[in-house]
Image (cartoon, rainbow, N blue to C red; front, side, top):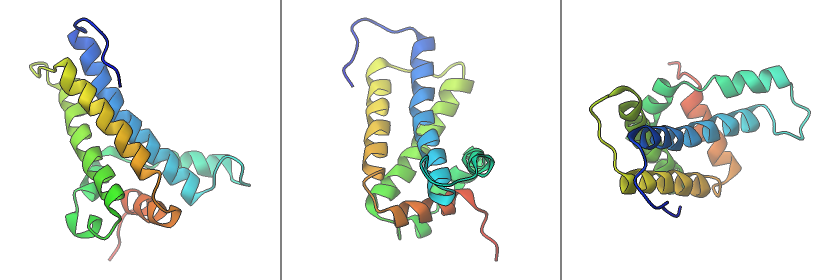
Length: 143
C-alpha cells in the first residue's frame, strides 16, 4: 500500500487499524460460509450461508488460532494467516478500546500490508486445507 502524504489523524489511524483486522475477519467468515455451505453460484440456501457467515466468533476464532499444536498441522500460509489474525485482532482491540494507545502511520500501513499479504497467501492454499481451517475456527470441538 502506498503511504499518503501528511499526518493522518489519530481517529483515522485507529479506524485503519480496525479495518485491517476486519478484512481478515470477513475473509474468514466468507470463506467459511462458501466452503461449508456453498459459493455464490452454487445451489445454496441463503439463510444457511448467512448463518455460517455470522457464526464466526472473534474470541473463539482467536483462541483456535492460538492453538499451536493444531495449527502446526496446517500449511504454513494458513498458519501465518492465523498468526496475523491474532496479532491484528489484539491491535484492533487496542485501537478501538484503549484511549492511551498511540498509533503511527508507518506501523498502521505495515499492518494493512500484512493483512493484505495474509489474505492473498491464504487464498492460494488448497480448498480442502482452507475448509478444514474454517471448521477449526468455526465449530466447537466436542470430546
